[in-house]
Length: 507
Ligand SMILES: Cc1cc2nc3c(=O)[nH]c(=O)nc-3n(C[C@H](O)[C@H](O)[C@H](O)COP(=O)(O)OP(=O)(O)OC[C@H]3O[C@@H](n4cnc5c(N)ncnc54)[C@H](O)[C@@H]3O)c2cc1C
Image (tube, rainbow, N blue to C red; front, top):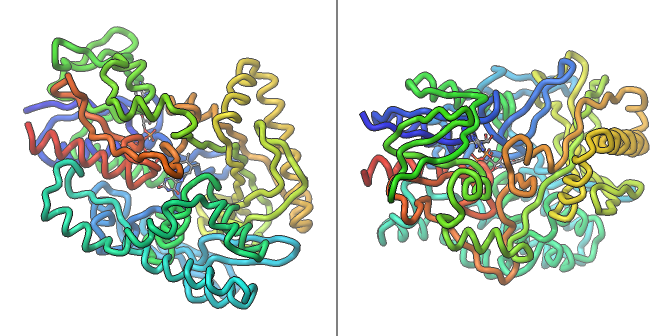
């Protein structure tokens, strides 16, 4: 039986492992952390669960190719639903299966006025038109294009470079509106999209949620994912999702080695012979899949000379291919708070986070996940977007742990003050559960500059899709979000499948 070793037990690595096990290969996954899932994770603090990842899972809609693959790897099991009781509480049928169907994408509040981007896009259209009739043309265009963007998906059948004409025709037909969307929103940034509107609340709604240097189409497609009922949240959150995938892998006979970082890929001529661990143990294998961060892969695991040229260009040209991260805080709210559903953005007293002055913040309520908090309480989290400059700030501070921790605590206190200013009913009921920074992702997942997605697509900058092969090494494959901007869970899933596909079909 042929054997594949997979470096990294994130979503991409585990996807590859599951599909190879199913195809009759022997596989072993080596993961540096004690918990599988990589960035798709969560952790417990003081009886609460903190969630690190899924705000929306593209492919949560039954009947789509992505849904089938998510189901195949164990993410979506059963069809549990969340129901609202008469007193406004959200209750689950099954704690660890199914999907929470979002009613709202998110909402914003400015100067006492609230605007919601509903799952029901016609409701959003109606409310936007009522709010700002003078923006009618742009509002109608935005909602019409969101409707068109509901077709957008990531192809998962086979690697894109292996697709034949017929495959492209099929894909083109299923995403026939994409060229129109790219023509309208693929050449402007989110910030420029917002500037097309007059109403400050609409501008805020557009720039507030995603980094405003992203291309505008990313905002439209993300909203469309929710309106298409294709961007919901697996119950149990990111940690439970990752553990379900790990269980599926182990049920199929896969060997998952946790707490086992890989030191390097062993190279003999034009092939790999396996991997080496930090204690010098050598693990033989016929194939190696690197699903770890690509900067780490080509600086620590393999010589940089093997890095695909396009990827090298992306890592070197920092202006053209920036990455983003976040400064985040989780709170335990000792109250059955029902002030808003999902994520709310609001303006706040100015605060310096990393090297940026911020004047607004987000708060996500996990009230839809009763398993996350003790009875009568709820988890809330905030995420301040951080760029590479901020990363350097946190990296320098991290050199002195006392200063680093003191800064985190100071900011958490400042943020609590701003939450109470917005929601005075929460005074005395907010407990800081944890604070994490871009450095956390570097420490935890070896992430390049603390990135939690891949390269941001910039206006006028060439976008690359990196084939998951390594020129000069016959039996080494790549998987993970870095292969296709802007990354994210569907890319991790697809590239994990592509790596398995190449081994199954080409070897
Ligand atoms: C706050 C946050 C919110 C997000 N929200 C969403 C969302 O709503 N929707 C969405 O689609 N995506 C979201 N993402 C992105 C998503 O989490 C990632 O795209 C995805 O999890 C990446 O998976 P991956 O397998 O490519 O990489 P990783 O998750 O980075 O997996 C790589 C694994 O390799 C391991 N590793 C690294 N080096 C070694 C080594 N030397 N030896 C052994 N193991 C090693 C790492 O520990 C890690 O487990 C979010 C991310 C964050 C952080």
